[in-house]
Length: 200
Image (tube, rainbow, N blue to C red; front, side, top):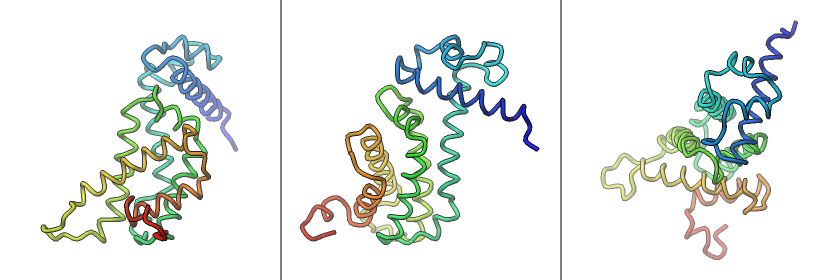
């Protein structure tokens, strides 16, 4: 039996989060007030405070929930099963891009010019954590290794978030499948080798 009260909570929180993203895109987070949010969501202030302490609480919970959804789609345990070959990585990147596409309005705004740097930082950290699981089992522990694991992972994570941001904002009009293939080749071969003729 579905609890009507639970459905109302989910619906109200969804309205508020949609209002938050719309207003961030329009005026930026700093200019938003609770009154703006309640008017945009079509609810009263009392209802807002039943769910959130203030606009910062709404923001924090929305970011946590979105990143948790992304992490649930790409479970850390699954990372240990990923091989460092192009086909395995294509499948991994496609899973990530598919969930991001599902919540495209949210990610587009939050990674855009008026988004929150803290969201980008948390997304990068999430990707780094997962890459540690993928790369860690393959990376050499040799102290003479030219590139350290933390530098390699930071490079890949920040580059991928940059690509995703460009893709979401419409500057890269490609399908998720095409982007996943490109990202997999860049991951395995690096940009210079990938750009060489007949390298793909």
